[in-house]
Image (spheres, helix red, strand yellow):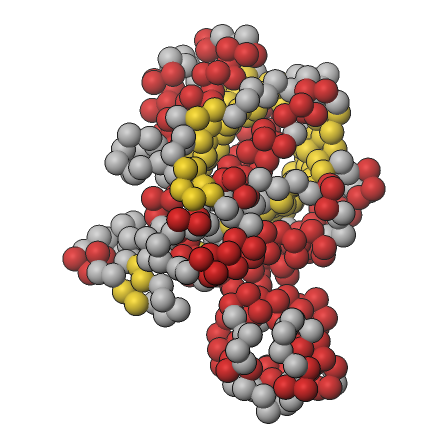
Length: 76
Length: 355
């Protein structure tokens, strides 16, 4: 699994946020469009693409997109 | 995963009853109009039928009204009923079992076997499996499976994740022993109590008896406040679990019972919320026209959603033709089930009733 692809998949769960805003160090909880619904879409995407089941705690523990990537990687 | 296959039974009729009283989600005072619109778009729930929870309308009352009408339409005599199973988390009393209360209130003979099963969203599929297996041997001839909940009672008024989601409903399914029946019920189950912390009403049982702290409104983050006597749901955990494990239970059921998805008429999804249902529909690869919804009118009615879907969306078809249906549910526990239900027309389904 590549970080670049993960970020692309991550960005696809957003409708309005500019794609250039998604970087490894992006603090995604601070993105204006981030909501509980977007969080669910991300959980579903991770489940579909990587067959990893995230806990709600995992989403809150991750600060940046790269943190989340590392959590997913550790569960694969 | 455990699987069962039930034969020698026939589903003869189904009926449902909901409270007349309607709560419009657009009228909820705790959110802005824009927030409510977003909520409705995500969950699909526009309004819900909810009782006033003062003891005047209990789940058993909804089930009883549905059952009295269904028995009349079927032409069944109450003296013939020898099995009554009531599946709910909202019972009349902590004890005795509500099924036994209903035996007396409905005038069903004391010779019947009546009992309760305490389950939520998976209630219909578990109840159908239990009743089907008890009846398949011919030990019982006519059974009433009552599945419902008046769980809007458990939602904190300051918890929009529950308050705007939960509706009340009671249903009844009439099942008959029939060795010549072509009906088939195949079900695969999964139970995982490690998920109990994610959908729970913490206090009031033997584990956490009611005490003065049970009544304190606690700040739970995200603008949500509830007491320990309200139902708590961690929605993203349920979502994550459901989108992962329902497809796995489905695959197990599909291979075990050689199910050809193209031959399936309808996939009936537990009306949890539209966002989860749509994710599941796409994962299970069913087109929209095969997956009916009524969540917009009734919200999440827990174990009643699948029979309620059949009653409101398939009323005519259940009578007119044979149907090959799948049903999938995840709920409190966690308790999961995926079923194939094959019927052969002639099923009596009166119009939805109101109380």
